[in-house]
Image 1 (cartoon, rainbow, N blue to C red):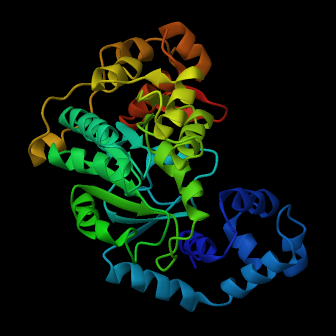
Image 2 (image 1 turned 180 degrees about the vertical axis):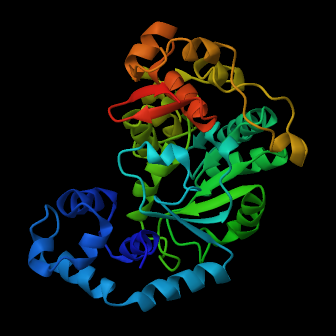
Length: 366
């Protein structure tokens, strides 16, 4: 069995996520040795009790589970990517807890590294829906990928705006790709898959249970350079996405709303806490200068145009000596950029093989 197959099978085990996987790797040094470990050895790893150790051993002994899962993915036209696959989205490699495996209908493209997430209330107002769609159109027209969660309300408006402009959009789902939730969004999901991708870390048959959605929010923010919250009540999944964005070093934006509207409570709190205020796409581009304007994306060729860099990225590259690594914070200080903007530019330079990342948020010329 290959490491790729081991990761897909481990991803099927309930409660095995990236944090526990890393503990297993720290203890056994390789997936092959994890596969050979006995019950007592597994239970000696932090977070792996007798129940989970038993499950791991059971799943290891049933490779047919893996074949059934891969066959189901193929029937639904889905690819399965793991952390050892070259096509695994580069931005997710940087987050604290990248998924063991990703199911994808459609494709993640290198240009999707220039992406902004738009999230908000499922019970959105007409104003909120209009703002989400308008911002998505503006981003897509500039060749910037729009990310959201395919939920009712703001999410759907964001996807529709990107599609309306002929741009790319990614939908990160809180369930397996064997179904679409909510079911009335099946036509929208088909359009998203055709112009971007449907993405999930859950097994194909996983239902849309409530506890999955907060966890998937870290992927929405992790795939994006910044997260725009359009409308959010005081307790909202969109605020969880904003928290994830801050933890991951992404920029957080908020659209102001009516002072007396319940769906403005969360966004106004974000603004008080320092989120960047957004009323137009230009507000987003001002905070994320690495999002170069590429012109209208009204046809497939423009929509898939290669991602460029602003001129100031040359200034970022000039801060490197030939062989000395430089820390992210040091680069931000030298260029005068915010850390999220600097990190975004470094990611683009990595994709262009101009720099490479070392442990500890250090970078060196490639």
